[in-house]
Image (cartoon, helix red, strand yellow):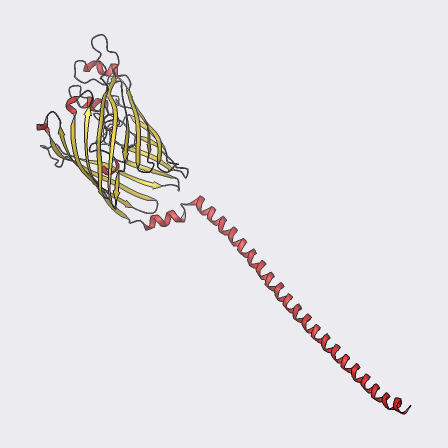
Amino acid sequence: MKNRLTLSPLVLALSLGLSAVNAQAQSASEQELMRRLDQLAAELNKVRAELGQLQQQQQQQQRAAEASKAQASSAAAAAPSTAIEAERRAEPSTVLGGYAELNYNRPRTHSQDAQADLRRLVLSLQHRVDTKTKIVTEIELEHGVSSAGDPGEVAIEQAYVEHQLTPTWAVRGGLFLMPMGLLNENHEPPAFFGVERNFVETAIIPSTWREGGFQLVGNFDNGITVQGGLSTSFDLNKWNASASEGRESPLGAIHQEMALAKAHDLAWFGALNWRGIPGLQLGGGVFSGQASHKQAAADARITLWDLHARWTPGRWDLSALYSRGSISNTARLNAPLVGGNTLIPKSFEGWYAQAGYKLWEHANYALLPFVRWEQFNTASGYADLGQGLTPAAQPHERVITLGANFRIAQGVVLKTDVQRFRENKEGDRFNLGVGWSF
């Protein structure tokens, strides 16, 4: 009994001590748990706040994007795009350019008639008045010297104002090149094969052909270019039945070039070209207008049209063109001219096919051989004047040209070729040339 009583206070004390320790441990665990819960709650509130800020920023960005899109759409509808405006502002206000051709021709059968000629020298000046308006002028000197006793001629090739109405449409007014064929608007020496320009686009289409008037030009994003307008016309009163000029080029003999041009009769013209595939151009043009100006025996309408194609896949440069012209009422017009060497034809036509190949290229040098086959007739038909009076249609002339262009720098080219004629054998010749444009 004594021992049991002695141990009881000790046991009691130990029990109370263990209980206190357990209570203290439990209290510490609860405190730690509460601390962690408070920490998690604080972090959750922080995440919620950050999420709210992100949502607010996204809403602001979305509203700003919508406002910017609406502003861009409004600006595009009201005026040319900022990129176009910036590009035009970056252009120099005044630009000087030009081109020249120096040619040597040596006939095969009459070498004594070989000649060298500064065929033409052209200086152009373009001035941008503002981002929407520019002035284009070109002055041309032919055959080196122009005076009363020399064969040269000074002419204004272009002089017009162009104003951009919208990003797509522009209007031109003045003296401009007609949008016909592949050569007339792009006739600088580096732009075509051969020393001389092809016959179809000089004898049938009288390149370089310009008229005075007004023209609308539309360039669309799908690669389509549309041109059309009203212009001066030809003058059949200039026809000289005793000269050969009309046989060489019917329209070239009666063009006016806006030099005191008769303007009672006006003409309309239109052209459509598509460049929707890189390296490919398909197009055509048409011109039609009266040309007697109430000063001839009868009213007469001149109509000229063409279809053309050019494709430049890789090293190849392939092109083809067909053109046909007609003149109405030529029977009445020719009646007083009977007996002359050259009467007015009622129809004329021609076509060519051409292939060039970039055989060699190094740095700025390039060698491009080519071959061209063309067929043309400046008098393929005459109106009936009665038995014994109606001239016979001329035979179709066929010419093959074989040669090469050698580019020695950008815009500078040396040329050589030989030409063989099917009908006019005396036309066979060897040609050399140098040309440039800048």
